[in-house]
Image (cartoon, rainbow, N blue to C red; front, side, top):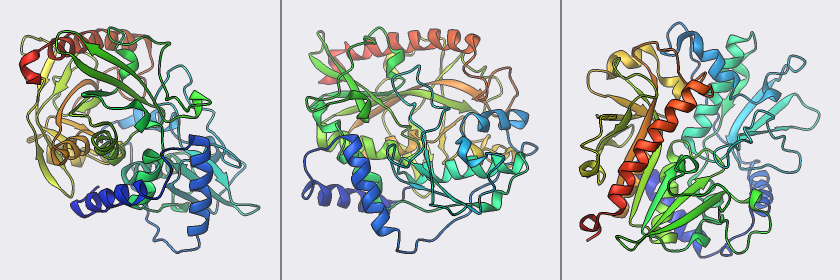
Length: 410
């Protein structure tokens, strides 16, 4: 997790990089530059860590765990003809050259579809899995691969990971097209492509200097709300802004785009057995962040959802990986916390330290305390998608009330 020391190092990296890099380069050029930089620094020995290995017998997902992992793990890591001596998961955004893109990437949505890539180390039996740089994301993906191998008769002991530095985490974001979005008042992140009351599916912007939109990390649509005269940006990200990556983006939204507020629309898990997946929307004003402590903020959305029968309030816990959600963890946390996900605490912490407003509205996608028909392993089914459409409709109703409220802007 991102400690106060790490956050300070991150801010230093922003200032340092801002002074020595061009305003932006394409994602393709960025990947080449970072690949070169990573290669040159790879001669330096970094400590390698062993990931968490989950067991369906002791994990809250139970027998659904393997199906969830199968959708996530890069096929190169589990080919039956390959018995890798070493699988190293590290932070690097690389989608060109010798990097192999996963065939499991979902191309039916505009954002959150790019996944870790694979690169073979010459003729050796070593495989590198390259994640978008983030401490939590690297840990999480290493756990995914190791756990899946353990369930399929492979060698989970071959998997290790290294921790990306603050500069490695911030560089691909700082050098992206994010600054080209320009100044805005409010940024909505997450499932923005599902908010069809505010956005159109075919008019995403990527910046004036974009030669090929598919090469860009971010896409956005900016809507001016007549009632409040505020500019609201609906910001999508092609990679998963897992865990601490989300906090880095929030800090840069303040630095690069002068944003005053961030609203996060996503999904999370519930620790309350009464919460049926895809039937409730979670919100709150606190999160427990490992290594930092309790993060508290004023939930700016609260006055506008008190009439909703779908919204439930609760205490949130930020955790690095779904693989950490064991039955033992649940037993220790369920008396105090109601919700869990990897991002909310990071985003709230970044917003608070940057003087920004923050709020979240998340569809409850799975239940850790009780087994329901739907969970993270089958969320692409039609019944789930239809139910979430209704939840996003309610989320948009709440957002519209907030966006149009003059009092909250003054």
